[in-house]
Image 1 (tube, rainbow, N blue to C red):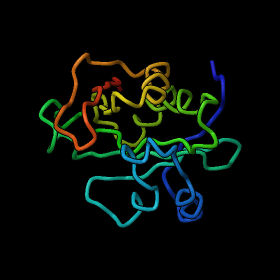
Image 2 (image 1 turned 180 degrees about the vertical axis):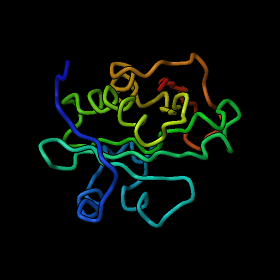
Image 3 (image 1 turned 30 degrees about the horizontal axis):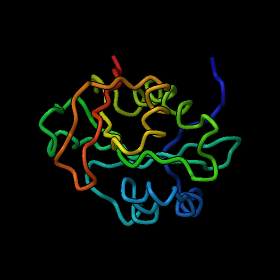
Image 4 (image 1 turned 120 degrees about the horizontal axis):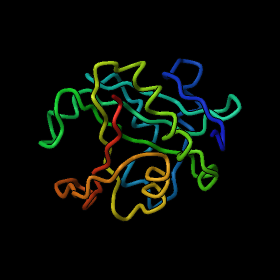
Length: 160
């Protein structure tokens, strides 16, 4: 059941200004960084995707098909989601949860060979964790502790 309809699409030129204007709450900046930095230039293995509500950009995320190169628990057929953000003025409205619910069907279309996807969520970002968990991400029960922002929950979402 769609509770808060959003759409997900690859980033197009018309959305760049809106994505650059996305901001997160001050305590979340360490986890995602400014959206302007996330668009600094093409990076091998990364693609940027926008989350929209009624045609307006409300969030974004990046798909990292090289996720397994830096994280021992990931395999070549398990890319990662990075920089999953919802604008600070739109948080708390269920948009992150609904985007998470839509991710499996969307991601199957853009990374059809992927068995599933991983995402790391900092243990101090409980709102994001709750949103993702409510949207269908499963907590593996393990923590990634080598990141620069402290311990992170390792979340998993099957695609097959």
